[in-house]
Length: 107
Image (cartoon, rainbow, N blue to C red; front, top):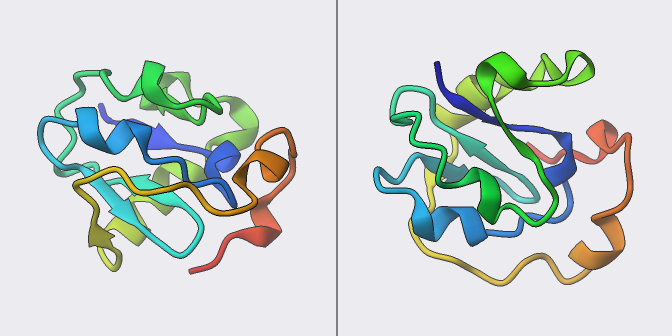
């Protein structure tokens, strides 16, 4: 089992979760973060750090977000690891309450 970043992270990319990850399992794309399932040790310390509640245990990913499990694995293979907190995207607070953001994902 691993943890999965879901749709709520798109266009926000808050990185509060990155600093607490003991194994540097997060990878960074242009406007989204993912968790590398091969690095994640299932510690769950990242979950309460996410201000938009985008991180779930694989078994708890909502039904309408299940496609984010293989997406995290796919993108973790091509995106670079992120190990330190950065500023969120400039318009993150505007996008945080928005739902249905899949089309906004930049690869």
